[in-house]
Length: 371
Ligand SMILES: [Zn+2]
Ligand SMILES: [Zn+2]
Image (cartoon, rainbow, N blue to C red; front, top):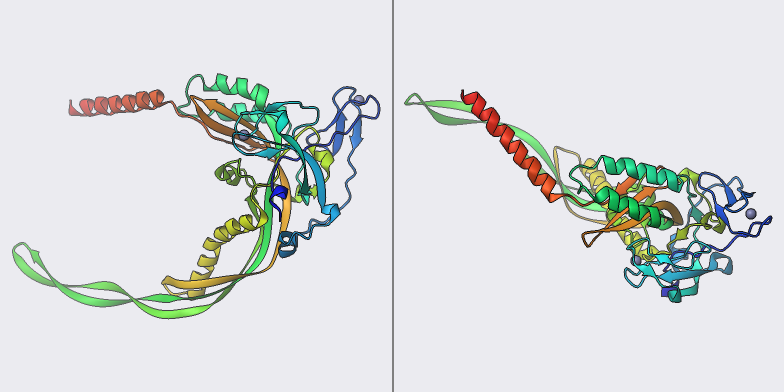
């Protein structure tokens, strides 16, 4: 797949209100476009649809048909490299991922592969801010001015953005060779000094006998989700799970109106390499249960992947990047479940004071016990 198809937020095309001509935005929690100016609403038609996966090899082969391609306006962040679309009617703004100003001169039109499905926003921005406020209040050892800094920042820079994900299904066959350990016990005699006399005693000792083992295991994986964004830290992306995938709808750019979308930076092949690593623990534990016995050793194994399928998804996130003492932190809200996942600074002063207080209490208790 050519490099230029692998990047960017997808530019929301504008949808004009039929009554007043203003721009209509997708309204979270609904399947409608709403006019902010006159309040008119427009249904987005949704058909009963079954969610299906697409052939992985065909997808990476770049035999994309014209219907699978769309032209979008994107802007690339000079600072972190994220390529995103902007909300319709936005002339400038800051990067969702790093907070750097986005230069409109960096806007360009490009051809990109259309996502297969989108999970529309359910949580709106007020709810996201509220959930974040609750999360902030529960933070231990947060610097005293953090709340104020972050509130100011979220007021102006909280953005709804669709993050690109790959969802993989694959059937794996693994042939392995290893060893099965079985316990057996022997009785040993030993001597011990008791009151100056040497006594002879016995004890049970456990040993492991190892037998070679080999075989084949099959594991099927369904909807392994890999973030295709390189700008949202992967550890945050992982914590945002679970997503309510049954709420996916066929991709329709109207769901993007009023929101940003990032185009995938990590292509489907690189994503699948990460997915393979995620499968390792399941495959290895399947091998161990196939070996059986009391202990297992895996010496080597090879895995083949069959019938690999994928879905290219856009998943909704409220996000704000904020700087605190020259360090970048992200806070995100899963816009489907409302779950908050954030990075936060710690107040060293508060931690030291707490440790000192604990030490004082221990000393006090010790002194009281002495009296
Ligand atoms: Zn209107
Ligand atoms: Zn950036």
